[in-house]
Image 1 (cartoon, one colour):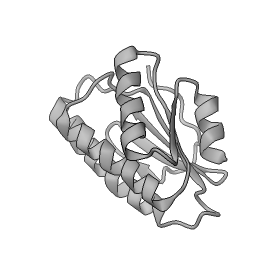
Image 2 (cartoon, helix red, strand yellow):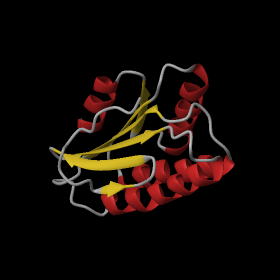
Image 3 (tube, rainbow, N blue to C red):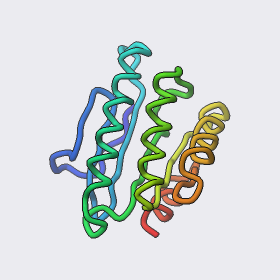
Image 4 (cartoon, rainbow, N blue to C red):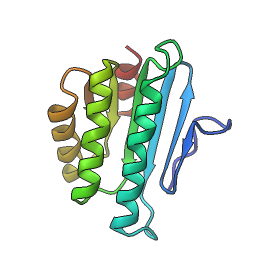
Length: 141
C-alpha cells in the first residue's frame, strides 16, 4: 500500500512511481512499487530521478539542506539500469556535500542493495536506515 504523501502541496517532482517534495529545508523523495510497471519502465523512472537529484543539488542549502530518500515501498531488488541510475543519483548527492538519509525496508535483499549503494557512492554524506525517523534526522544534520 502506498504511504500517504508528506505534503498536500504540489510536488517538486512527480513520476509514475516517485514523488519529491521540499519540506522545511529538506528534500523528501519517495519511491513505491507499481506492479503494472515492468522493469524497463521502472528503470526509466529511476533515470528520471538523476535529473531530480541534479536539480535539487543546484538549489541553495537554505532551501534544500539534505535529502531523505524513502525506498521502503520500492521494489526489493532491481535490474542493472536501475542500479546504474541509483549509483549516479547517490554520487551526485555525495559530490554536492549534503547529507543523504536513505530509508530502506526490512527486506534483507533491499537493505543489502541500499547499504552497498550508499557505501560505494555516498560514503561520506549517505547513510542507510530501516527507520524513517533516523533517516530523516541524518538528512537534516
